Amino acid sequence: FDDAMNKFVNIKIDSECCQNYGICGEQYVGDVVFNKDGKVISTRFRFQHTMTYNDDDYTRALVETRKVSDTFATRLHTLDGIEDTEDTSGEVKPVFAYSLFYVYYDQYTYIRGILAEDTLLAMAAVLLAIEVITNVWIGLFVVL
Image (cartoon, rainbow, N blue to C red):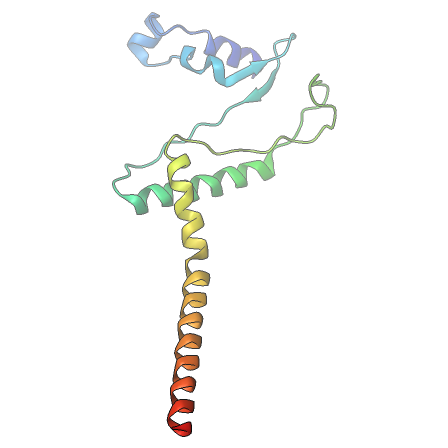
């Protein structure tokens, strides 16, 4: 696998294989990290969304991509015999889903998450204010 991956990422975009058969690996060269021995030690997953047209589509795409990345994260493991000079814990690094629009639409997931809580809190405050005002008015009528 490691040798085939190394050959794949070295297929140039202007090569005959890429131009005639669409097998191009050069654009993925930054997505695969090899160690000194040519073994794959890290890769990047890429997912594609269906077309997104409105805010609901963008937010749904964000949530679904996070679900998929969480699913893949539970299946990841470290490879035996591969040393990471930066990390000696041996733990699998977390998977992080990112796309440019996630930065903007992440707030929608937060807003939807607290919408019910804030709405109920506001309604309780309004009902409490109405109750206090009503009791004050009734108290004024009794006294007068």
